[in-house]
Length: 284
Figure 1 (cartoon, rainbow, N blue to C red):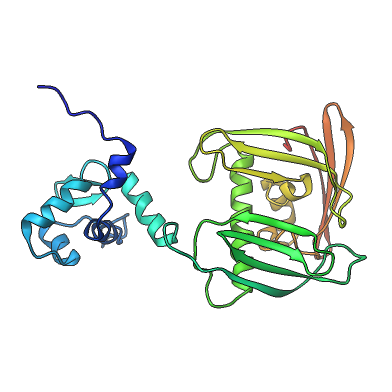
Figure 2 (tube, rainbow, N blue to C red):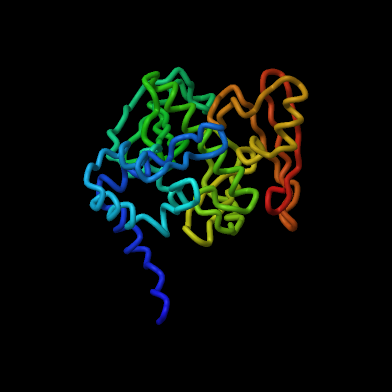
């Protein structure tokens, strides 16, 4: 007698194609009473919570999830690591239909000192976009995974986008993808078109080698998330984590000191605190 072949990805995801099975995942995603991770529930308790009265039908649905998204232990049933991923994705709205939000006016001025316009933002087609209503320069266009930004719009949308972009940038800069944990390739794209509000022309790109998530950035933006720079500013009472890189009150200057090897000196000024850092070929 031979072991059954492992389930394919399509078979595993097909096992979720029933509301009762998604309900099982949601119920097992609750917190454990001792506060240590997720709940483990006996068969009968889980059945009552999912509200499937027929024992055989409930056992059938639970069996479809076992081995991939749910596992049986001595105390009952609990989520596996992939099951936790699915539970978190459900809560984050990754598989929900999300309505577009905006466009909204903001109180942020254009970063170009010669432009009298102000910035607008929106969330459409799963993407956050920030641009000037006068010169039409697009500052940020970024895919956001997740759907609910709260009722305080556009402030909550701006805050959510800023924190997600900073988190992703730091993770990619450290060499691993924030979404699939794949390894990251870094490359300098070299001088390219400059924004009206920036003298910087050098652009860099991080690419995940597994899921192909990518991000382009500039040295002055990357510097805002580097631990050494964040710590240096924190010592002066300035929390860079609270400052999005599109805030006009953050002064950034870049000066290329050398092309081979590449060295860029970045000067950052926030709330009267100025810090200078020299970054190497991989923005280290």
